[in-house]
Length: 121
Image (cartoon, rainbow, N blue to C red):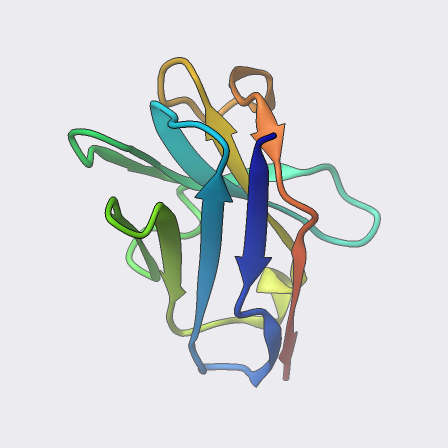
C-alpha cells in the first residue's frame, strides 16, 4: 500500500521559512512533488523532482523562494520554503508519479493528506 505522509507545516510570520517533508512508502516513483490549495482556489503546482536524476521544476510563483530535494535512502522528499508571504498560505500536498515529472495534477498517481501552512502578515 502506497503512503505519502507529510510533515513540517505550521504557522509562520511573513518573511519566515519552513521545511516540509514527505515520507513515501509502498513503492518507488519516477517523480515526487508538491502542490498547494488555498481557500477558495484550485490546487496548484509548486515544485517537483525526479527520483533518480534529481531534475527539478518550480512554479514561477515559487522560483527563488523554495528548493525541492530528496533523500533516496530515506524515501523522503523535502520542500524548503523561504521568504514566505501571506499568499503562500495553503494546504500543501505531497504527490508522486509513476510517469514523467510534470506540473499537471493529472500526471500524479498518489497523494498525501496535506499539511497546513499559514503565513501571518
